[in-house]
Length: 414
Image 1 (cartoon, rainbow, N blue to C red):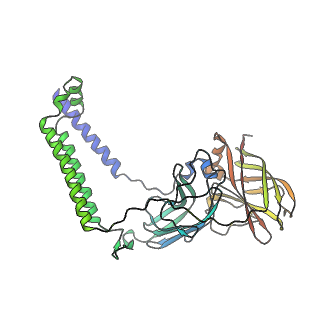
Image 2: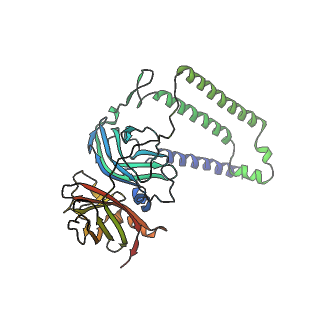
Image 3: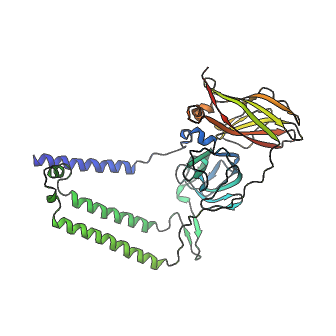
């Protein structure tokens, strides 16, 4: 009986170690992200990214890519998401395939979290340096405390070259130039191995005897006090004392070798300068809106009033990174991701120039497979089934005005 218990315990330990090894060394590659699984209302009613430009679509290792554009903090920010009082401009990539060298909002360097104002529009720029060869999906992203990551549009960028050639030199405040990619690699490897061996030694000591089932049986039999001997207590105290001593001595040695240090900066930056925008001379009232499930199309009835001095036409509807265009009014030349661009996805019942002082009620339809592909249609199953987006109007000179819309969305299954 004891032999059977010992073998069960032995193979149980082996199974656990194999499971640990499998999960530790298996690292599947990731090419794109889970933006499609993010709630549709989050993408529609939080951050609206527009005028985006990726400076390059193909680079070599060590070359830089700039992502520039604007983002609007939506006025109808959902109540279920914390307001963007602590936000961090980020880039969504599948691991450290790029390094982020610089980030700017409103021309100001933002190496840490910032406070954004609801209803304001900001310019941004992110500078990336290519690190790992491959084809990578690169997204804009805003991390909001209490709201999580808010994903923006993504574009494929190809990195060519050799990963071994990557360099990341920086000059410290003391004038020393180091390569962050390889700095102190030997020291890092040593401490990882040291603590791994230390931990394995602890596990081996306690697993040298029958474990799991035999110990459970002893505990159930009321013999739990026999499981830990005086020698076991002494060994445990020795491990604890050794751990504390090693940490204290290594910390003291590090402080002596590097006397000049500064902590990581974790404060929130305020005073981000938004874009000074003129109030649009166009007003839009959403009379009603519905989403036709079989046709993958959203229909809006809009009453548009032009209070400006030039006739305008509706050229684009933007929501959740997807752009629906009327190509007879506006054509995109920025190289926007094709899967997010419906070049002829916007139709207007009467899109003739709207004269100054004129009011017109029109039927607008935004249709494309992106409603289903990017799961935007899921908004009709939300407890607060509202859509939101931006309307872009253009006059004959190409001057653009942006109007924000926000209204309930009613599903239609016929």
